[in-house]
Amino acid sequence: MLEALKQEVYEANMQLPKLDLVTFTWGNVSGIDREKGLFVIKPSGVEYDKLTPDDMVVVNLKGEVVEGKLNPSSDTPTHTVLYNAFPDIGGIVHTHSPWAVSFASAQMDIPALNTTAADTFYGDIPVSEALTKEQIETAYEEETGEAIVKTFKDRGIDPEAVPAVLVAQHGPFAWGATPAKAVYNAKVMEVVAEMDYHAMTLTTRDSHVPQYLLDKHYYRKHGKNAYYGQDNPKSADHK
Ligand SMILES: O=C(CO)[C@@H](O)[C@H](O)COP(=O)(O)O
Image 1 (spheres, rainbow, N blue to C red):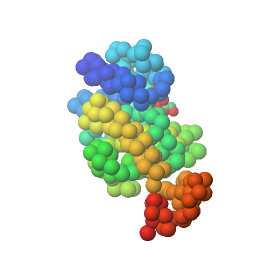
Image 2 (cartoon, rainbow, N blue to C red):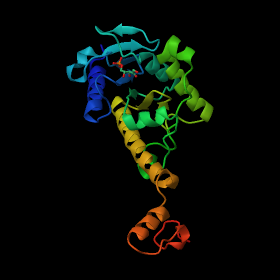
Image 3 (tube, helix red, strand yellow):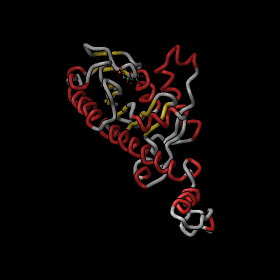
Image 4 (tube, rainbow, N blue to C red):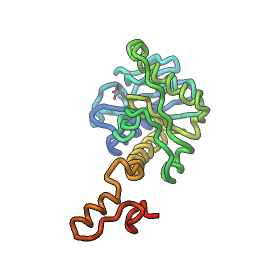
């Protein structure tokens, strides 16, 4: 059943290691057939270079396996919640891509600071609230999905406008009209997160030696009068 969708989801999963979005067996991609109310997802714990289209698992919108010889991804409950809550999405991807996970670990949104972000995300990529110990210990993956939905509801964000989220202390989820588009959005998120990290480091001047102190030591070392801040025409603080 759903052979064409299995092939499409398989190909989307194979993009994850190619795009450096996953390590080992981390991450997963799914795609949905809205007419049949069934989605296809990567099997759990299978190495990407051993995956085949036939390994894909078919799941209904209650999260029940309807076809598959392997166990579905451990994140299947999260995908299930999102397909039910966001009726216009056709594919979902989850990765542990390191720059996005860095923002998730810091519980910080990935801000839209440049056109690279704005071309794909019409606003900041939100981070969810941290899940409670009880949520983690009871139904972690389902609660993860609920935390994502709550983030968009509470903050009034349209999941079509911002097709991505960070789950605090966990990592990124992204979605789109197709599994391939979901993977594209996940990669743009990772690239934007890296760009933002560097931009935010460069602009927080107290995160490194201020220019006028560098100048002062430079001038002392080279026998010139030390200038401080606004007195120094070379300093970014020069008034
Ligand atoms: O987030 C996690 C585990 O924390 C999962 O996404 C794993 O990284 C992949 O699990 P499977 O899809 O292979 O079950």
